[in-house]
Image 1 (tube, rainbow, N blue to C red):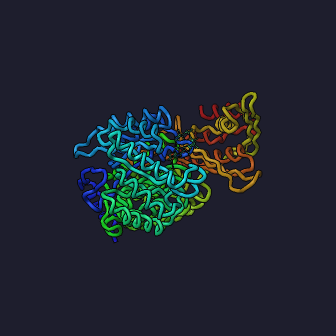
Image 2: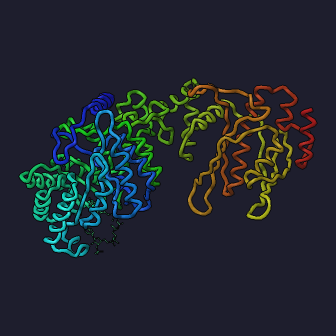
Image 3: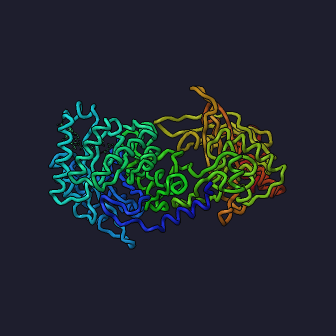
Length: 598
Ligand SMILES: CC(=O)SCCNC(=O)CCNC(=O)[C@H](O)C(C)(C)COP(=O)(O)OP(=O)(O)OC[C@H]1O[C@@H](n2cnc3c(N)ncnc32)[C@H](O)[C@@H]1OP(=O)(O)O
Ligand SMILES: CC(C)C(=O)C(=O)O
C-alpha cells in the first residue's frame, strides 16, 4: 500500500522529473504519457459553457502553468471569435517558454474540408509547437446518415486532409476517426494505416459516445497499436466521453493498452456527460502509476489543479458537484464520527492524498465538517479549537443538543457550536413569553407587526412596529419591550415536515450589542476573541410566528446570562422587564421601564 504522506513525496518526485523533449511522433521515454487538454474545445462544447476570448486566453495560461503537453485551443472555423482566440493563444501561450524549456503545443481542430484545415493552420501556425487535429467519422451510422459518404470516400477525405496539412507546412498532425468506439475495427486499421502513410503523427481514438467498457477499450487500443506499428513512428491517443461514467477508467485502460496521449478536460466538462477529467487522470497516474500502471507518469504539476479547476468553474459557469473526485468541495471533508475520529488520530486513515497536493489549504487540519453524523471526538476537538474545555458531563449535554440541532440544520458552524455551549451553561432565569402576533404585509405599504408578550413579572404588554419585512417588524416590536440590545448573527428556517402545511423551524443566533456588547468573550482558535452568542429556536406553521418565538427564546438566554453577571442592579431589573404596570401598551411599558432604569 502507498501511504498518503509518502504519496505526497511521489507527487513531488514526479514534479521534479524532466519531461522528454517534444517530438510529434515519438516519445523517448516509453512510460511518459502526454496530457492533451481539450477544455477550450470539447469542454466549451458543454451546453451553456461558452467562454470569451479573454477567458480562453487566461485558461490557456493556467494550463501552461499546470504543465499540460498540448492545449486544444478551439475549432477555428467555427467563428471569427474562435479563430481569434486560438490565434492569440498560439501567439502568446504557445511562445511563452518555461525555464525548463517546456512550452505547450497549441492545437486547433478541423474537419477534413480544405477551408477548415487552412483556417486551423492559420490560427496555430505562429506557436512554437503548432498542431492541427483533423477528424472524420468512421462508424457505419455516422458515415451513412451524417456524412452520407461511402467508407472509401471517408478514407479519401482523411488522407487528402493530412496531405493538405503537410503541403501547408504542418508537420504535427493528429487524426481522429470519430466514433471509433462504435466503428468496425478492421475499417479503423485500414484508415489509420492510410493516414499514417500520408503523414499523421498522432492517432487519436475517440470513444465519441462513451459506449465502450474499459477492457474493451484497452483491447481496441492495443490492437490498433499492433496494427499501426509497422507504419512508422506514431503516438496513439485516447479521447473518452463520459456517457456511462467510464471516461477516466477508459482513458487509463487505453494507456495500459499502449496509448501515450490522453485527451481530457478540467473538471471533466465537455459535450453531453462530459469528457475524461484531467484531474482524475493525472492524479490516478501520479498516485498509482508506479505500482499499478507499469510506471506511467505525466508532466502535469498537480499543485495547480485546484486553481485551474476554480478558474474553469468561474469562467464556464459549469459548477463542480460537491462530491466530484479531487476538486469537489467535499473531496477533503469528513462528516461522520468514525471517519472524523480516524482523521484526528491519523489522516492516512481516510485520505489517499492530501489537499495540499492539488494546491488546496484548509483551515481545519483534519478537514472536519460538523454535522448530523459527527461524534464526540470531533465535537470536542472543535470545542477545544474554539477555546473551551468541557467536563465529560458538559460534553455529553452539549453533544445531545448538538445532535438534535444537526437533525434540523445542514451546516453546523462555529457560531452554532459557540451558541450551544453558551446555551448549556447559561440557562434563562427570566422568561418572556410570546402570546400573540399579528402582521400586515404584502407588496403595498409598510410591513407592520403587533405583538402581545408576557414579561417575567407576569404582566402582558402590547407593542407594534414597522420593519423592512414582517419578521423584521416583529423583531423590532419585541425589541421595544424586551429592552436588551441584540445583534442578529444567524437566521435560518427549515421545514421539518413535508407538504404545504409544513412546520417551519426557525433558528436564530444573537449576540449582545450596544450597551451590552462587552459582556463576555471567548478566545478564538483563529486568534483574537469571539463574542458570546445565544441561540433560540421556534416552530410554527406560520414562519413569522416561528421566527418571533426563536428570537424571544434567544433573548431569554442572553438576558439570563447578563442578569447572572449583574443580578442586583436596578437597571438590570428594568431591563428584565420587572416593571410594575399591568397589561399596558408598548408606550406605557416603555415609560415604566424608562422610569425603572432611571
Ligand atoms: C465529436 C465532436 O465533438 S466534433 C466537433 C464538434 N464541434 C462543433 O461542431 C462545434 C463547431 N461547429 C460549428 O460551428 C459548425 O458546425 C461548423 C461551422 C463547423 C459547420 O457549420 P455548417 O457548415 O453550418 O454545417 P453544419 O454544422 O450544419 O453540418 C455539419 C456539416 O459538416 C459535415 N461534416 C461533419 N463532420 C465532418 C468532417 N469531419 N469532415 C468533413 N465534413 C464533416 C456534415 O456532414 C455536415 O455536412 P452537410 O452540411 O453537407 O450535410
Ligand atoms: C473530434 C473528436 C476527437 C471528438 O471530440 C470526439 O469524437 O468526441
